[in-house]
Length: 626
Image (cartoon, rainbow, N blue to C red; front, side, top):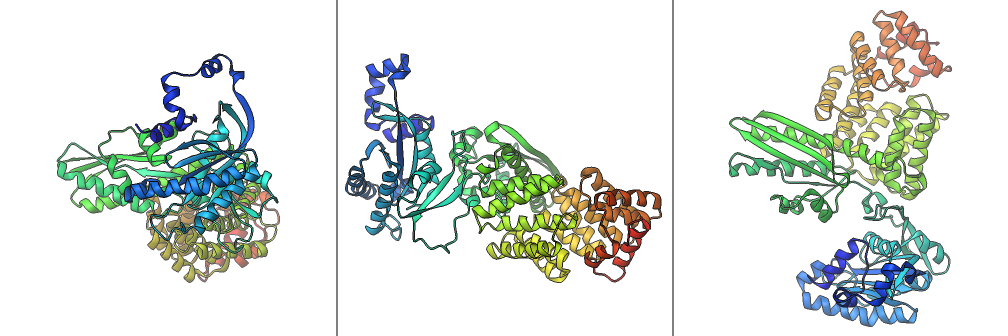
């Protein structure tokens, strides 16, 4: 094992040992080490600024040109990094392979050194145009550290080594402590990247990119939800063939490829490429080892059993860190039409995974303090609060979405979710400024699509806002079709397009689309909402008893969703059950005493002639005031 590999293995366990001392310490141990074992006060503590620098893509560079890469890296260390370090009072605490750990007495000098080094590297021609150019990533932290005869140890060292992974080649990242020390002392500015999950670091760490003070203000920031591993990461293992002929392995690999392709369309997940997971097909390593090597939080594993004319496929989604399955499903069918069966299974898995992962991720951030959340986690927590349907949860969800956009104004899904939140504010009768919130929702949904025109979720929300708030159903359906072309497994887009069709009076087409939704994701957390969509479709079709059944089903699933009471009261009244209709009408009025039938039907988006008249008739029969 090389010293570089040994150093990295030790560092993974929170240890830091000077590379040049490894052999001597391993062979004999020193008197001071024995003393420290029995007398912890022998260790010295002090405040230090720690800079961790490494070469981006070092393994690739070595593979392409090992001698040339090593020569360039040595020249960079000896002629650029170390002379500047010495002038600013720094010292090399560790050096191993492609990495340097440097200690400074001042956070200001540490950042000054990093800026000077990166500028010198760029000025020296290492600007990335050459595919073999050396480019550095630098992370800086300031903290109390343990000094064991010149060897620095402790959380502060580990954090410096972790955060540098957030830096793009040529960038510098620092913790909030460094930012606070350096603020206004150097001609730099700090761009907030949020609070990443740091491997083997239990506490929350806020991180910033260091940029020149004159960096273009109009430049689009790199979104925190893309940058950090707080966005859930997933690997799909090659599905194993259980029994059967080896010739059948193509089927398992085909399933795997289809699932990866489908999941890759999601803007809410990182999905590891198929080429990276194929090497694990023999399962010689356990899933925890695989997850560590791929740096993923979730693994989808599965098997295929083929017997005679039948196929059985098992799939399991595992949250690796806690070693638990959060979703599992068995699929069975005939293999007469092998590839149609493969497509159906892949679609079912793809549509099921994203909401399951989102639920686990929401629980993960649920207890974290709001001030520690980055843009992605703020959005995730907002959505977990929205569907509680209380005044407090609405307010908290709105504040979290605003926070996400403060952290990242170019976060497309945050704009889309803000529009979705405003949709509920207005639909539930909670908005204090309906015209203003309508304008905000329209602007937010349009901004989301402008930022990411290939995000199926953003397109679906924009389509719904056009339909629900502006009655522009033709344009809305175009956006839904665009969303479904991008991601045919988007249950959300199927469901919202069904609602627009119901608004238009196209009840049977709407119900057909809902069947797609429920086939793709029968346990969608938003089913309470889509059951109301089915109730609206049945209402416009004049099938009031069926409408009542769907909406009562939704009420059982989420009784706090007050908007459902309007359609339920009207459907009960037109179905002939006026006593039940008046009871529901009274319940709705208790929540919204200022409700007016005339005002409601003036904006509610049923567009087919006669449908709004029947709705108004039912509401009046239910005792709601005109």
